[in-house]
Image 1: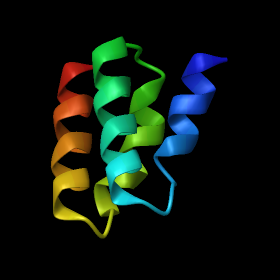
Image 2: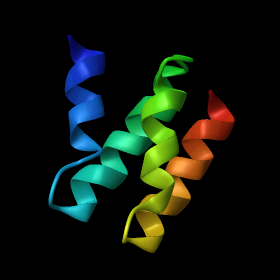
Image 3: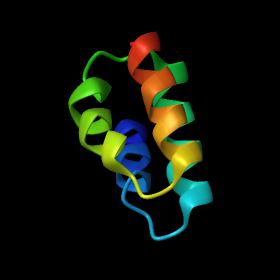
Length: 59
């Protein structure tokens, strides 16, 4: 359940929530996260894209 809730945060309207979600998925180290993080590399917010990339590397 926690994983799914974090994934939902990647599509939140607030960039701070998307950033936190990306960071959380990176910290989980769950390989499933990569398929959800990859589309978020196109986020409109530069910091969000950066955190998404870092999280993909961690997974």
